[in-house]
Image (cartoon, rainbow, N blue to C red; front, side, top):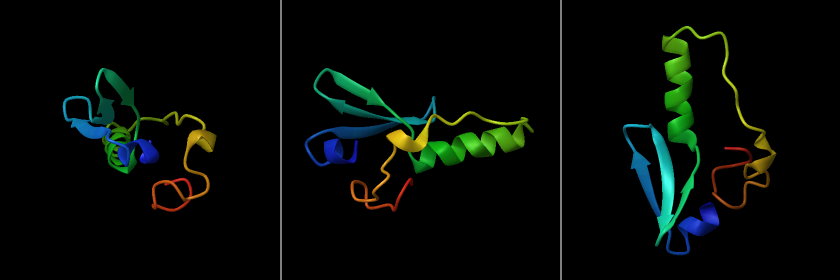
Length: 73
C-alpha cells in the first residue's frame, strides 16, 4: 500500500465506515492504518467488548521500510 501511495494512488478516508481506501482509476483497495485501528480500539474499549480480532500481522510492513512508520506500524 505504501508503494501504491507513491505511484498515483489516492488515499480516501471513509468517515462513515472509519476506514481508509486507496483508489486509482476503477481499482479500490480497503485496508486499516494507524488512524482506523485507533478508532476501532477506542470503540471496543468504549463498548467494553471482551476482545477484538486482528488479521495476521505478517501482511504488514515487517521491515519498516515501506511506510517509514517502523516495523509493524
